[in-house]
Image (cartoon, rainbow, N blue to C red):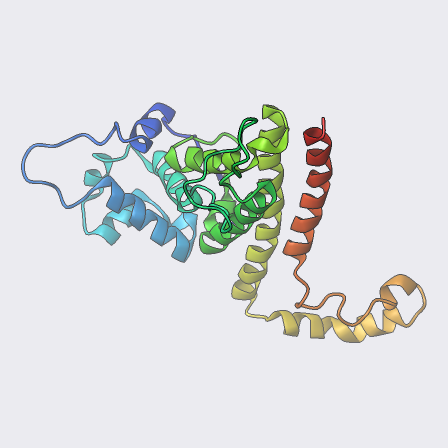
Length: 270
């Protein structure tokens, strides 16, 4: 988590070839046991277990029982490998929106000349699912937070995810730049929450001190401070104000969607 690197920092053209299936070159002789798919899978498993910093071509060659140079026959280097890893995990959630349970899966999209319902569950459910799926992705692959994705290399996983999202929110009445802004807004919110959650787990692993132990260590001093009268609003907070039972992620997500719903209603009533 402490190492930050950027996607797209290698040979972007080569990454694109590999991502879209045009770069895996055939070799003479028997079919090799080592494949690009195996390399990417092993790299993701290693990053999940030990963090992105643990992923190196030398370490992967050891994990795969292959010579380091044999890896370079499939992928130019670590930077391009990170591009492939990102797109692979992003593709885990890149599925088309589920049809509304109340409507047949074969329903046609709504048009001005038809009363047939849209097969998608609606923009709000689409955004909710996308947000929850993205949070789950960060929880499963915490190393994603250590990659600067401001210049993403767009492979089938990333493009498929955006296509799925757009399919569910395209009828909101928003302009194309606004639709993209919705995706950016939701992703920014989710990554912020995910970073806090991942850091909470990480700090316990690094320090060996649980949350309960940490807060108990502060309790004697805080009790004195809170009875001093200097912080009346803090002192008046209910005992469960900072409790673990309140779902801050869902609360924030619903408020974000409430605000977006106001704009959608304005646009669709025009």
